[in-house]
Length: 214
Image 1: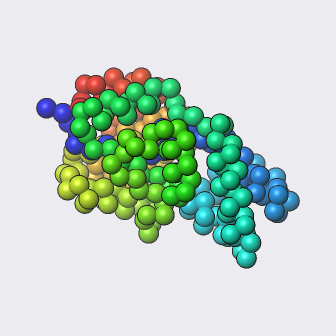
Image 2: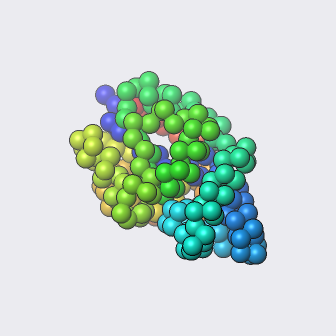
């Protein structure tokens, strides 16, 4: 019998290599409208709220123009992003076992939809929960709890897979198991110190684990 009835994935740094695209999208906006050249660290310090929240704070009464320009750049330059090799095979394998699949990401709905559709994995997921769908972003467990409630799944039968400390904290708060993937985590050392249930340093390690457990 398999060990999980549902699996929840983060997006950036877990399914997709999107950091360069995100950095360049924000940098494009900051240079074009505010004559600022933000470093990667300065952009990472913004992470938490959705793109719209950040852009609204930046743009003020120019928000609608800035927002449209951001998403056009993000979409038009999506060649900068890709699925990590082996991820599509993992998603197909999970679906073949009739396990419920969800996304819980801090990305807003528009950016998440663009990425998942451009990389052709949108249709694998039974539920997609973005930063626009919750009142409190990670490390709040609200997004995980929405998944548990919608499908009436026991929390002990759910696995969260993510690359950040906030994923670990959200999973712990919800009472689900947490697998931390550190193949591209920008906070790898912090994550490793949090004592996740499982740690995976390569995509194929995760695939082998899932083959044995679902």
